[in-house]
Image (cartoon, rainbow, N blue to C red; front, side, top):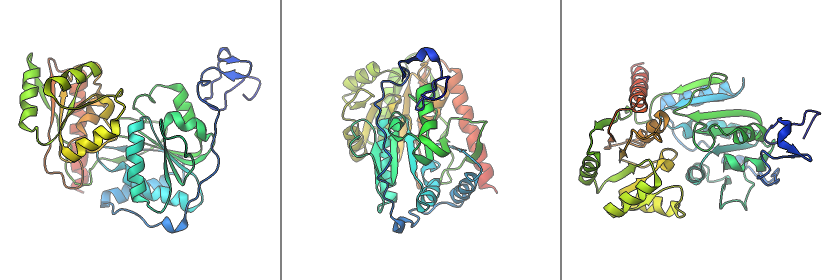
Length: 364
């Protein structure tokens, strides 16, 4: 605590009713463990690991210049390569001996992202810190969930905040303040479905394949279950994601169709994802896979898209799972509903607007 008014140095709580005998009850559930050393960056790792498209390179250059003046928000469409446009900035900071962190709300995304970044930077140590991975906490580049930032108070000179509109980060005051207190320098925010008026914004409206985003086919009918089954059956040997609004429905459809499913309650998430990538086929899932994972040539189906769980942002992210990669060859997005909600309408409008912006860039 600091000052007469009492402010928690970790979560920035100032409400006096939240304090008892010098302890903040807002974040007391988080262990008081902090990591301050162990960053072992090797200078010979500074070779740039990927070849960017001309537009990605333009955004990467703009980002490296923009951080001189303060924090930045990169407004990138799904599949635009927001990870790749940050690589040069990361190398710049590491080469100067500064500390870099990358935080995301969800555990599964931490593990996916750590593997990608380690592949890009084989000569440096990229450490994942999330549930089940908390023994090795120090490295050149830390990739962690927002919950794990309590370990890194006042540590990072650059903190990249990926998907700040995702659950459980969005609207969580404690997590939002952990993001503030873990960084003593610059924040870079990345999302396709967010907006920030108080920081510099850089647009990335074009995928590296130079293809437009798939606009969802919206199918309204009373017997949408039968239509869903028929459409999925026709592409059953492809890579197929079927999104449903609840865990109970995921289990039910999985049993009925005799296909695997994945929800936040599944313990072997990485094994499920690996099997899906290796064998393709059908995977029934909830919004746990709405963002942060990439599957090539994927067909996306959303059952009961009019359910309140599927917000505009959620539907945009789900639609963004299709037609990924440098050379996409196939993939569609289908929404099945009994009524066309505002979220569905706004999702389609947002994707069409993004495609218009992409066309402008392509025609320059």
